Length: 579
Image (cartoon, rainbow, N blue to C red; front, side, top):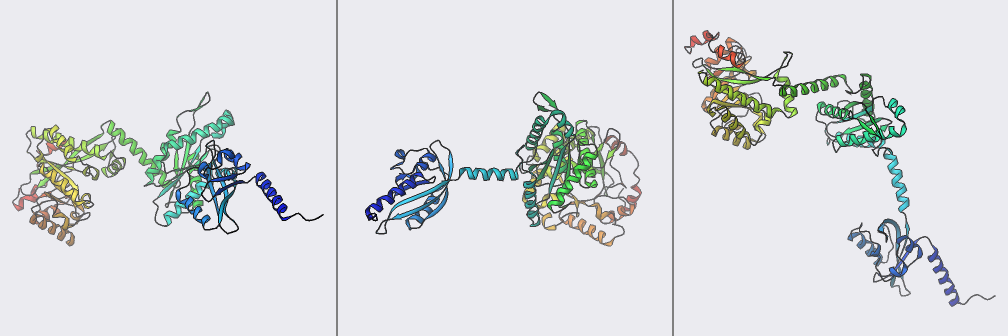
């Protein structure tokens, strides 16, 4: 049998090639050099939903998904016209509007003259493969029941958070471990199906009540891990733990069953408690175990000291809110004595708190708490309002007129409507602005001196006196002092304590008094508790003193009585001819 003729060989090869292309599972598409489709195989038709008739003389953009930008296709085109093949994974869209992923190779086809005449695309539909990989990745990192990250993914994020902290980019953070109390018993009584619903609803509540940047993970069984990205202090962590416990106290609707559960929370802090992932996870587990041992429905820090501190803070917060509601705050007034004639030149209004059981709480304890709770502005306004009214009552009673001095907190001083608030309090009390003095500390004004000067000037223009409190205790700078529209400097108690025995303190007080006088300012010495201190201040030319030796803070009625009593300190003023 003789060999086929060359022509016959070519025809046979062409038919074989055509059959292969027609029957292959790969997606084959051919375009001419103008970019129009001249051939598609059945696999392409089946995958895209477009028939050969619909595709011919169309551009490949027929199945464009819009998921790639112009630069993506421009890069492929430049590769092809340069005579090279291009390999890409392209997201396409079929006739039904569904996306599919095609891993394809595009190749330029040349004729005998080495000219490009066609472009051939041969691809594979890898959508299912990617979906399976995504599902595998999902199952590796997420909890199938709740959809939350699992312990493994949380550990990865914890690793990253610790790395940021080590590089100096991260702030302190907290890790919470939450467990449902008696879940095993509840699950056995409800059955696994309702038990699963309970876990799902727990996850949903956690997501709704936690900060958006928190990572919530189902660790195992009824335990959840919570990574709080940025925690300023233990109180903030305790607040969130308390919020979670309260949120889970509401009844759960499980089918026709209404179920109540409680939760316990363990808290560990970084860097306070540790700086490795394993260490923090272990700490949180231990803290949770302690919370459950204590009876559940509570939180526990990894250290007993922090737990006690947080509990005390929360108790005080609740008590402070009750104090506001039941009007447990009151004012005492401490006289400020003129060394020129021994008269009362003013009184400083000081807030006090007495609990219903008679216990008095130091302002040093509750004022910082009011600031953290954001209540200091409303309480401060109450102090200002009450002090103004009381001063007007004294005036109407015929007592000698004197100023009432009220301290402003940092948050009060930064209020844009401070002048309006002060004016409202004065008007309500029918009190002249000249009877009010406002005390501000140095540290309030350093960060934004220009704004501070404007605020003080506005207050002074109203007729209000301004005093710098605790002068010398903070950022004392004569450079900024000359810019401040103030009337009085109050020398910090720290310089008065050893005034009679410490040469350096005496020199500082003398310098402050001399400087203030040259600037046209008056001086008040705070914390005078000894006769020697008083004598020395008189000799240094101080105008005014305040302290326990002269008078302790006292309620309004007691102050009226005090004004009529002989003054125990008067004999120290007599030798100087001032009393």
